[in-house]
Image 1 (cartoon, rainbow, N blue to C red):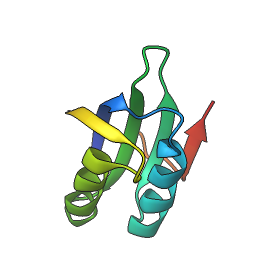
Image 2: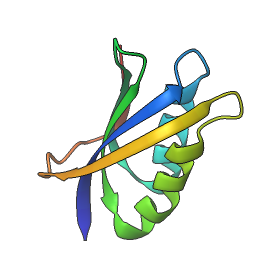
Image 3: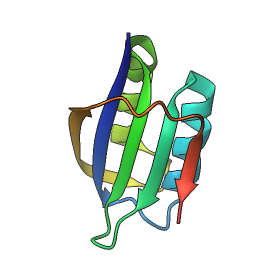
Length: 90
């Protein structure tokens, strides 16, 4: 089953290549959607994929790249938007 999740990551998550690492991991897992930096210092992700893909993606988002320090992860399920790729929004 394909699911849509809205994920907000807080902590030291900007300026540490979090968006690029997220895009690479999403592409490895076949997840579609986007990632962007938010003005409040958080990272926001909307992603669509299988339950199996999210079993690997969510723990990745909770850790991030080596120089990141994730303090909190919030996840909310949403309506499918049928993304065609996983992009970095600027």
